[in-house]
Length: 73
Image 1: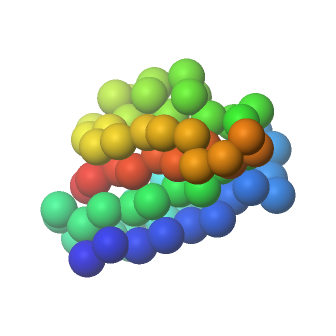
Image 2: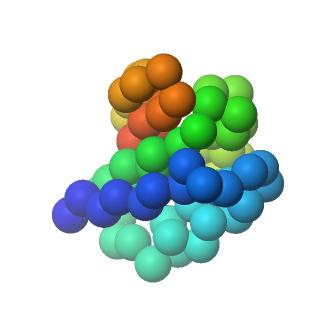
Image 3: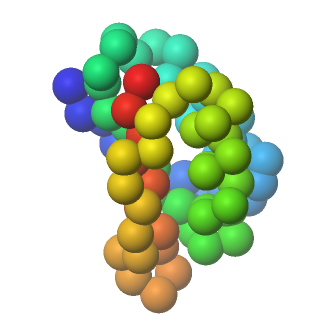
């Protein structure tokens, strides 16, 4: 299944904590799309994926203010 979490209104570390909590509720091979503001994006979630044994499937700019990260459990 694919899930989406909009974290654009939040500042670090809240997006990381929210993603971690959401991933705990997912089954293996489920995907979680995170919509982030640029402050909390790129480096943080690359490290997060590695530390939490999830795959970083894709990351890209959705707009000037939003960044998308897709993680797979």
